[in-house]
Amino acid sequence: MKQIIINLIIRGVRCVFSILYYKPKALFLLCNHTELYKSSSYFPERKQKSVRRMFLEQCGQVWKYGWPNEYYFMYGFDVKSRQEQKAYLHYAPFMLRRDALNLASKHNSTCILRDKLYFGIFADALGIDTAKNIIYAVDGALYLLAEKRYITLAEFARLMNGKLFCKIVDGECGDGIFILKLQDGRMYCDGHEISCDELGRRIKGRKYLFQECMVQHPEMSRLYDKSINTIRLVTVRDLRTRDIVVLPSILRIGANGNVVDNTSQGGIAVGFDLETGQLHPYGFYKPQFGRRVECHPNSKVVFADFHIPFIREAIGQAIRFHSFLKDIHSIGWDIAIGSQGPIFIEGNDNWEINGPQIGNHGLKMEFEKYFYD
Image (cartoon, rainbow, N blue to C red; front, side):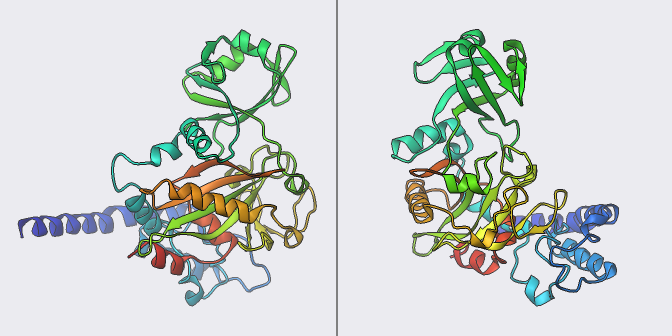
């Protein structure tokens, strides 16, 4: 009884603090960021609401969830009725429930997903194709994985030839990624020659993984050939049956010269049919990069005419992979498509729901079905 009273007091204090501090703070942010309620529409074929109404709806989001809906325009709330909006899940309750299920214990399999080196080792043990890891660099010290020894930067430049995809071991959203080209003892980054000292400074203080650059399926290159275009496939363990199911997912496509496909870096998100791999008619940029498009801006490939190769194999392997991670409830997989089939790049326990909802439809029904028993 004493613990119940204490819990009620804590909840009461949090509620008061939210009303007196967090919600006014969120409203102040809303008032000072007009792009949250005043912007061009992703759905120009429908009549947009007045600025006043959109502002009031965002105030409603603050009152209900404690924060404006950052995806208000991407979800089409500026043209959709309240009934239509009810199908969508706000990020705040999703994040809380996702983390409560995935991080239920302090020590679980999420460490495999959070570290790209561990991920590659584990996937390889299960016979799942991943990008080949070449160098593990910690604070500038380079470890050659195949030969199980440290090498100097000068030796690295002398030994290696070809392209390496370099990324921070625990990085997110394309942070710190660069492509390193090595040829005849020389190194090039972003088209410019760099020295060993320059490379050392670039990777100093971080843990980096240098991977062999993947060659994607010709169809995926036809869509856009300057980045590896990846499927963000979401698998969830049904709390009732313990079966692993797949939620509506997206294909992320690089654009406009970018070497990564992340939407935070200017990439495009497109939903697709899980059975056939056929893309939905529209792709979506984040607001700072554009709006809605029907074809790729560079390759001119029409999204509705494109089918993702090996989609059934990608789904089957993601389900199998997830089956070995029994203490993780939901995972957002990043999967490339090579000429021989799927190549798993990474898995994310902290995946975001905005992409799948933007590219497909509101997922509140699926959330209530699979995230609660």
